[in-house]
Image (cartoon, rainbow, N blue to C red; front, side, top):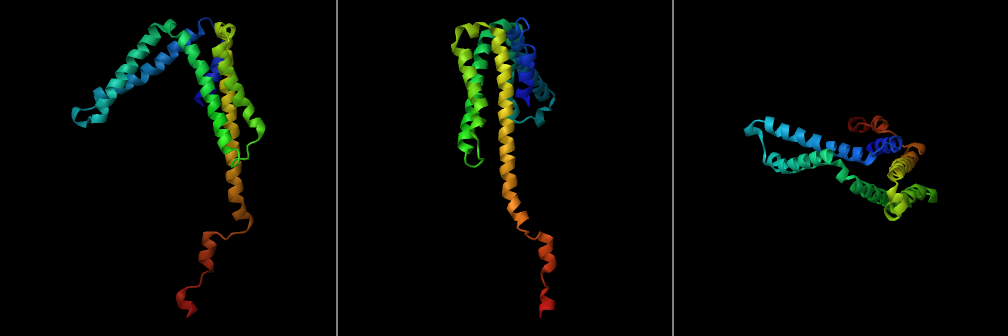
Length: 196
């Protein structure tokens, strides 16, 4: 659901000037807010109630807080990195679905066209990393990333429907054969005293 929302946002705002700078600031806020919330939670908790896990979480929370602050204040430093991360993300997401579909092709009766969207996502990721003219066109990379995130969600929906269809087919034979329900078995059994 989060990737669907991210895809829609990227498509809508792809032409905004400095879109990657704003993206860096949003990601910085996503690091900053949970870190602040965790640190406040640990600080407010009574000293006797704090566990070793609470203290172990302080260091990553401080790291996330510092990283979030830097990303929000110096967002322009991260726009190139963010663009590379978008390309890598597309490759990883696409390959995840391709591998999952290959492993599930027999059990889920996967059709060949199921592979189209994940392969397109992988190709877009590779192109956004390898083609210099595309890499320099930031709005186009953001738009492609948004579209690919929608394709990723479409593939997830296809997989969910295929899994649901298989589950339904597995439960259907018992119902179609007229297998008695548990309470019907109880009603048809003869008590031991009456049998004698």
